[in-house]
Length: 161
Image (cartoon, rainbow, N blue to C red; front, top):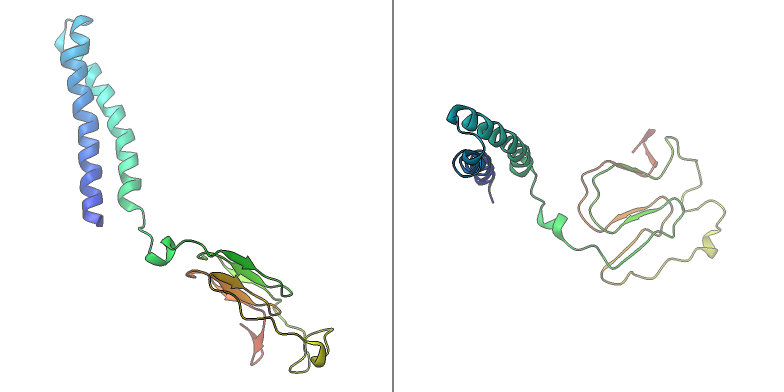
């Protein structure tokens, strides 16, 4: 439903939440208790106003909510793993910031991981469909959309990324 349609529905619900209880109370319920129509309609209007205020609060939330994208409605992936050192894996969409490193990454010879000799390094097998795996050191893997800031702590040209 488009935004105009949501606002129209919320306005109609608010108007109905005022009109129906006001009329029911003033015409059907209160005549047996109160004979004076000005008091009867005053009480009925107060009740209708209170219910309309609740309906208006609901209507505002209904009309202004953000419809999710197809990416947000996608079911989460079946398997999520982050076996890497300081790695992050998220099965669905990410809306927050993620940082896997420090502001200054430790300097290492290129091609080496701390404490692992190049000949001992094993690369993981390709992940199966429907999985999210962040297997490298300070890696980030997201199975859905991302709207947050991402940082691995790596440095390019002297500035952290």
